[in-house]
Amino acid sequence: GVLDGAEPAVTEPPATVDGPALAREIARRSFVLVRNERAALPLRSGTVALIGAAARDARILGGGSATVFPARVVSPLDGLTAALPEGSITYAVGADPNTELAVADRGFELRAVCRDADGQVIGTGSAPNGHIQWMGSDLPEGVTHDRLHSVELTGTFTPRESGPHTFGIKGVGAFTLTVDGTTHYEDVQRPAKDDPFLSFFGAPEPRAQVDLTAGEPVEVGLTHVVELPEGAGMKVVTFALAHAEPRRDPDEMIAEAVRAARGADTAVVVVATTDRVESEGFDRTDLRLPGRQDDLVRAVAAANPNTVVVVNSGSPVELPWREEVAAVLLSWFPGQEGGAALADVLTGRDEPGGRLPTTWGALADAPVTRVTPENGELPYDEDLFIGYRAWDRAGRTPAYPFGHGLGYTDWTYESVEVDGTTAKVRLRNTGDRPGREVVQLYLAPAEPDASRPVRWLAGFAGAEAGPGERAEVTVELPRRAFEVWDEATGSWAFVKGSYELRIGRSIADRRITATITV
Image: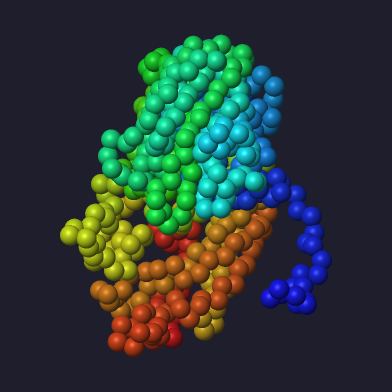
């Protein structure tokens, strides 16, 4: 009753938003084009060989707590098929990044049935995929932890490929797994190590292999007897039904992709991470793409010099083949409309609008790699020198620097006027199509101080202009850009003096400079 009688903060609902259109716009604005040799993008007219497991089964969002279930997902294959002329696109898997079973998803129609100790149904819940994770009171309606004895994931699976399909279980406790009327596992699954987090982050255990025919649905079921540890701070029910499609010879799959690439005008390869190498709850051990994806890209690039690679990951990965391909586009985790947005960008309907918020390079070259605690401590000896500040201090050149990103037109930076801490930058679109530029302003102290970075991002602004048109942006540099933390006073201290203002397209691409004295 605390809010009884309170005036509403919002008196009318907001205007209706076209959710899919907004998601599509956000995705294409986030894509970062880091390489585009010989103007490989936008795509030229002709045939396209689309390659990669993630082109068909896009990874649209992060794992763990980031998981949501959209009403639809537009994959790169869906998006490009809709955007390109009929018959101009072919598809090949090329390489599967999943080296383990994945949570049952595509082709599965499941529901969760909750029963008490007598086997009576006490509630049912939706199951958008094969993963059940109910935390605290997040249980199906009518179900309580006191009465809950077992949960059955039940439904059908319609395979899209014929051959031996593998089914597995992720979780700890007693399970019964049935496929097509046959019980394949009925036992207690325990982790090899006494680690309570394995039920959340451990790999699924393969428990059955069943020959299935594409397009013919079969019944599947996984029943789990719930055991909640006594004294647990939060009661959690978590387990998963896992699945893998028939495994093919990796060399044969790459050869198939090479044949497709050789017969097309352009090859578009979509590479990706998986939630087994990039998700929450564990550290990454390297920055490599999983599986044979690096081998795939090299083989395709050797067969078709007009190869475009789309990188579907949430954070940096090593791209050892980047100089061998015509273009590299980073699509991150683009959301449900990612495939449609990708088609917009690849075909040139829209520009890729993003700039790198991170520095991309080989792990061996990274200046900060001490991440393992010793005797329970991990000292942050790097202080402020992380990210691009660390690369600057080490004098190392990354593959792609902070702030980097290309468009489909060219820009000339003409002038800058500084009034106090306000900078006004003029630039011109010197290309042959409309475009958007992200003007970046970096501060560098005139008198270097070893305790401070060589330079740092102080402000940025977007500019749009048509071919031959001028644009102007005004950036107010915030006070914080000139401050440092004072340990003695426990507050921010304003550092007076002279600074060079470096303006350009990234931290490594300076176009014009000015001086600021504060």
